[in-house]
Image 1 (cartoon, rainbow, N blue to C red):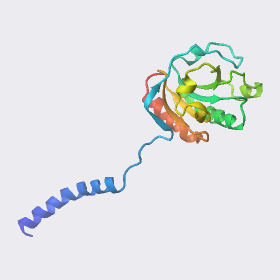
Image 2 (image 1 turned 45 degrees about the vertical axis):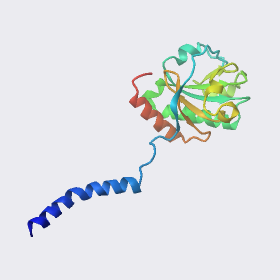
Image 3 (image 1 turned 60 degrees about the horizontal axis):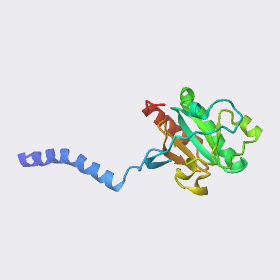
Image 4 (image 1 turned 180 degrees about the vertical axis):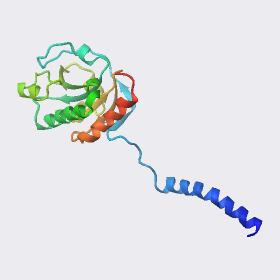
Length: 188
């Protein structure tokens, strides 16, 4: 084998893997993100508000929610089947977190200010129901108006809405997103 052939083989040995990696990257692009929910970019800062609980449970919402991650949904009118499905998804996703579940609080913004039915409060114990008739959150959350009533929002302890899920959110994937965020975060 001549020295020129050896040099060409050596160059090919080092250049081909680099060319192959560029080809794979551009012809088979990686997935755009690893999260299930839709990220809110940039994260939306939400104002701190003085809320009143309407679920008949003791305690101030401000102290129950301070420094905690929130799963927030909105309800307008009585909690029908779609509302119960969202509450179930929020409850199960939080339970899947295991020992980290204490860092997450489930919150329902009741837009009409009507207290929830007793069976709903019992079925979804631990959920904080808030009178949101005058809340700025209901208009600030992405989608505005009635379009975002069927969504589940993730809010960090600094009160930034950072992600949302559709009405038919997959519980396992929602919990997986929460696990990633809680693992990466040192707050809340």
